[in-house]
Amino acid sequence: MRSSLVHCELSETTPFLGNIQASRDWGFSGEYVEAMWLMLQQEKPDDYVVATEESHTVEEFLEVSFGQDVLQAYGEVDNLKGDASKAKEVLKWKLKVGFEQLVKMMVDEDLEMARREKVLVDAGYLDAQQHS
Picture 1 (cartoon, rainbow, N blue to C red):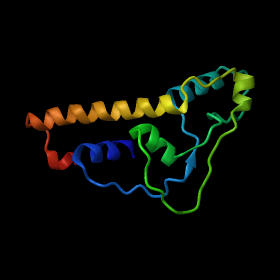
Picture 2 (cartoon, rainbow, N blue to C red; picture 1 turned 90 degrees about the vertical axis):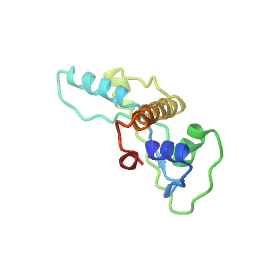
Picture 3 (spheres, rainbow, N blue to C red; picture 1 turned 180 degrees about the vertical axis):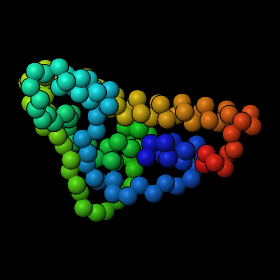
């Protein structure tokens, strides 16, 4: 979604976003990998939920990403939010990257990737039609 939105931002096309009221537990994959490593260090295997324990809508993601209000979309809201209390208690795992920082990291990475691709397209090393 992010790279599509960044592309739309750079090319001034209109994206289709679907249900922007859908709510998700957005988290940084690097922290989840750390939690997986901590799980592997346990003497006894067990099941854990690794989550931010926060739920944010796609609309919130867009507002943090682009710094502006977005149009409302209508539809049923699916709220996905994990309970990481066991991972916190047993593994001593804790969240370090919050929602807004995560979105900024994702958008910054997509913008940088789009800039690099544009340089390659402008220099004739990539076909612009294949990257639109």
